[in-house]
Image 1 (cartoon, rainbow, N blue to C red):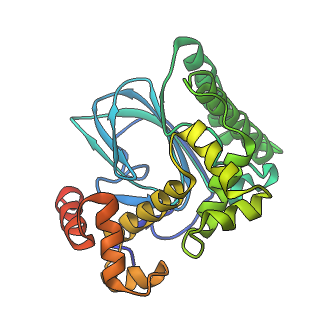
Image 2 (image 1 turned 180 degrees about the horizontal axis):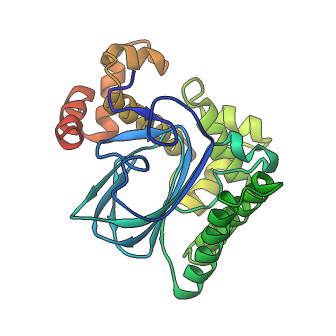
Length: 278
């Protein structure tokens, strides 16, 4: 079992539901726990009161009122609050949203501060989802799914409208999705370019223009993120992690990780354990 937990809705290791919504709760351990963990579900957390930090995949974000967070499965995260925190929480599995075949890897930001008009729309959707969840009426599940889909579209629109960058071309969204599904086995830009039907040079031009980084760097960043997740959330030996991710030589694995992070896998694991396993 992962040492920091791989948790289902309700934050247990047993899956017993695919959807949950709570409004204006305070320190509810059935919604969030006080240690680093990853989810097997999606979560939308809307902060109403409180402060502290929310670490998501090793990036720290401040907890402030009217900041909304979107957490994806597999992401390692940890809420460190200063005192009590009041927030609303929506949690759902990918299976729950199958009727909509939603691409959750689009442009929904990890966190976003809501403007007044955005708060009104988000509050309306949260209330509608909640009321439907307790209504016991016919077709309530289908209506909840529809309203969650609308909420996700709203969050995506908020992210796009408030982005200083141009809208990302569809080919780059597909590139990111291909990387997510194949990075452990395929690390050559040429492979992904072939899957997308473009040249490696053209793909490189696009990533530099829209992400300000080469196409290869995106592959390496995803690989480093996975190594960090495994170092933190599992008790696997470093050699096991290297083998799992396709490295045939432990020495090359260590050099690769240090080149991109500045620390060895062993140093990183020790540092993260001290930080997150309090």
